[in-house]
Amino acid sequence: MIKKEFIRLYAKEQKVSREKAEKSVNNFLDVLEKAFRERGRVVLRNFGKFTVDEVVKTSGRIEKVVNFKKAEKMDLG
Image (spheres, rainbow, N blue to C red):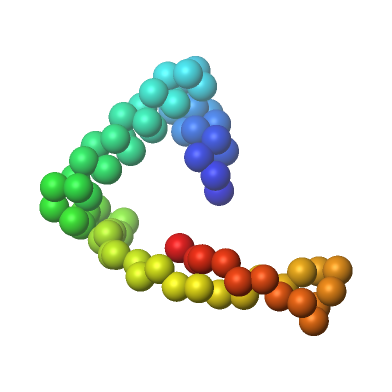
């Protein structure tokens, strides 16, 4: 589910306008982001535990659909 679909569902379930639902969801995500930055993790009881991990940049190969024998290197992450 993408954010837009979540907002639509939230508006329907809470019986509020899409604009009000979007504002509520964005406010929640802003607070969540702030908590990640300050503490590095968020625990929502009976829902889940979320942490922020650093990802090491690696390189990989993308194969072109037209010619699988040729491949182009690109940075991932």
